[in-house]
Structure formats: structure tokens, C-alpha cells
Image 1 (cartoon, one colour):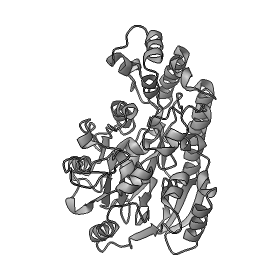
Image 2 (cartoon, helix red, strand yellow):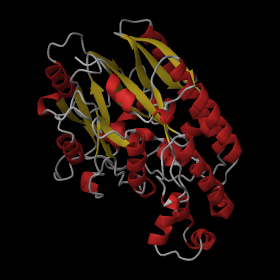
Image 3 (cartoon, one colour):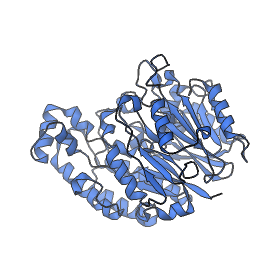
Image 4 (cartoon, helix red, strand yellow):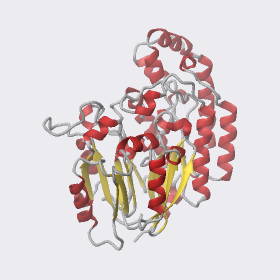
Length: 448
């Protein structure tokens, strides 16, 4: 058996972080639209979390933000002239379009891609498929740059396989790791890949939400599993409860989180909870450890409490066998029902023995908690050695990135500021320097 560890790669918040209310179905995003944001604080809050986890002994990486406002998209949509002219035209003729191509949403790297570790794949490489995020225009323009950044981070073709995104149509709507979990005894062993979908695209009679969109399809999950060379016996598909999608649970990671031999989920998370449990236990078989199914009852924590606090949009991290820490946003501590439940959880018999609270207010106000900010990648020792080392968090990188944020980021940004040509210049200068700090090469279109 290969010994392996799970790395967390967090998205660095971009210089245009703003609240434009672009994400229909994401209650926090919509409720905070038009408020001024603080890009500098957002980036620094994310860096503090990354550094804290690295200091706790976890392998922690950084994924670079994207170029925003994305001028190439505006050119494709008919705006022309200089960059400044394009911004002025877009601000006058299509301000919401300008807001969309200025979104810093790539910070939520749980949606960046689906990752299958080498222990699960037929060719014994780590496989990456960037999510097409087709349900939201502002996110659907991300996957090409995401793919380039992933390839610059995980370069070695001996160890890493990179795929293009699935076709950008609703039938193959793919939201990445926000709807994907992996269960295993040890990270280096073959695991169970658990895909959660919102609807079946080719079956109109199947259940689906009525109010908000089901962003992720069964067909997308099946395609990724085939592409990554996964064993069908070690893949479990389950449908998210349409009613909780309509309540504002737009991804599975807002109502469930899993790690190794623990599945922590809400009573109402899935359409058929009994079948989900049976399918997981069947796939688990007689592994060396017990699979813990930790179901949070609605009588103790309501779905609305889950959404308000982002209890499940937390990071579940292994310190040792059957010893896990749950990383939660500060909103959990401020919700009496959630905090009472968490205190009873760590006092009980589950592997979750500790809670760590982080202030992520800037991200939370746009609808993303700790789990949204990270992409998990299980890696063997050889694969760890093959990563671009300039992307791994340590004292030096933490100091360099904080200095870089201080140099380029604003501490207040209003939606009207997105038309400022100087913001585009600042952002490009920042990203150009960042690619040198992180040794990424020319991953942005403006660099080519």
C-alpha cells in the first residue's frame, strides 16, 4: 500500500472580490448584493486559514486567482476598442455583464475540478477534470484558466492526468468537488468516490427541484467517473434532496462533508438516505476501519440553521486514525443550535474530536465557507515531490503573499468600481507578479 496524505489547495481571493449577487440559489450571495466588499481583508482571511492549517501539519497549497475583469469574454460578446473603452461600454450598456466578468468566484476552489487520486484510477495517476460550471455564466468562463493553473501546479505527466471540462451544456452540468467526496481507510488505498447530483438530465420524470436550479447532473458525474478510470464497484451516486436545493442548499457541501471513514451529513440532505447508506456500506465492505455515518437530525439543527451557519461547509481533516478536526466558520459559533450540536458531537463517540473556528466573513458574505475555499488532492510521497513547490504554503510564501496583497489590493470595492480601468491594470500587474512568485508561467491570456 502507498502511504499518502490529503492536501488542501485553497483559492487565493482575487483583487476584484465584490458582492454583485450573481448566484441565484445561493441565499448569502443574493442577500449581500450591492454592499461594498474588502478584497484585501478577504485575501488575508483566506491566507490566515491556509497558514493555520499548514502550521497544524497539513499539506496546504495555493491556487492563483483568475484575470478579472475578463476582457477576452467582453470582446467575444461584441465590445471592442481599447480595454478602457470596453469597460466603459460594458458599464453603460450591460452593467450586470461587467459584474459577471469581474467576479472573483474562482476563490471557491471546491468548484474548480473533480480530483481522483491515483489509488482509485486505472492508470494509477491523479486525474483532474475542471468543472464547466455551466449553470452560472460568471463561473462558466473559469474552466480554461483553472485547467492551466492546475497543470502549472501539478505538472508531471508521469503522476498527473489533466482533462478538459465536460461539454458546456446543462445536460452535463458539473460543479466539481463541491458535489464529490471520497471515503477510504487510508488515503493511499483504493477509496469510494461518492458523487452527489441534483437531477437526471435525460430523465424528465425523475425528481428535481422546483424553485432553484439543480446545477449538477448524474450524467456529468458518470462521465467524470468513466474519464478518470474508476472501478464501478467503488463509485456511489446519490441524489441530493430537491427540497433542500429549493431551500438554498445549492451544493452538497452545504449540507454534508466527508473524509476518510466519516460521513457527516444532515438528515434531509439526500433524496433517499437509506439507499445512500446501504450503497456506501456495500462499497465499503470489510475494510480495516468502520465507516462512521454521522447523521444530524432536523430536530437539533434545522436546514435553515445549516444554511445560515454553513455547518457542513466545513473542512473535516484527519490528524490520525479516527481523530479528526472540523474547521468551521465563525457563524457556527454564533448560532446557538449549531454550537450546541457541535459541542455534543466532540463529546461523543465519533472520530470528530475537535472544532477549529475561523473568521471568513468576506467569503461567507458571498456564500462560501471553509469547504468552498479548498480543493482536496490525496497524494503519495512521490506525487507530493512532483508538485510545483512554489505553490505550497510555508512561512516564506505566507509572508510574500501578504506583502503582495498589501501592494495591489484595495480595502473597499463597490460594484461601480469594476468599470475603473485602473482596477484592471492593478489586477493584471498583481497577477503578473504572482505567476513569478508561484512559478506558474504564463497562465493568463494577457500574458500571451
